[in-house]
Image (cartoon, rainbow, N blue to C red; front, side, top):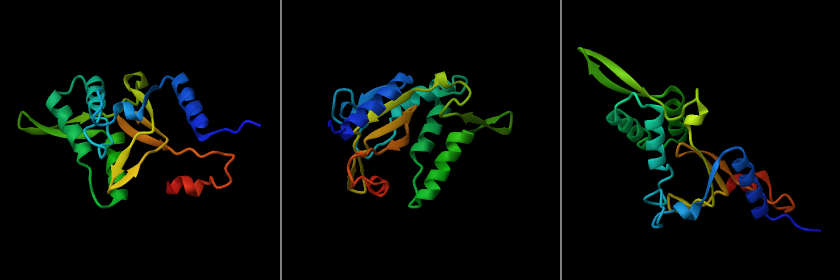
Amino acid sequence: MTRIAESDIESLAIEQLRCLGWDYTYGLDIAPGVDKSECQSYEQIILIERLRNAVAQINPHIPKSAQEQAIQKVLRIYSPDLLYNNETFHQCLVEKIKIPYQQEGYERSYEVALIDFDNITNNQFLVVNQYTIIENNQNKRPDILLFVNGIPLVVIELKNAADENATIESAFNQ
């Protein structure tokens, strides 16, 4: 009987996502220091140029300076409280990022969207496998990361179903 390896499951998941229209790249192909690098360090998780391109496409009526302020606001979300970070990011994602400006003596704000929820074809969907992240001196390499407009939104950690030691808890801990 042929054993199913974890890499087989990973390949199948990637192929299914590609059939649904997701682009694919191998994590090492966009890692720091390579020709087509999309991040400056292993601590960087957001693919910033992809995010910039998506924000420009989704918000063409908003000045570039306001678009960049919105991107920087997302990149600066940091607190020791993970729940606070997640709630703040979720708010930016769903409610858009408000960038104030003055007009005729009144304060107004641009609302910069990170994802186009109305027209999904304006978004870029990318599946990446074996993408290395270093956080707090810990090396992490999820099996599959799903990015929307350069923002990692889904982590998939695969386990071999035939392995008796492969449990939900071990995947979560990993």
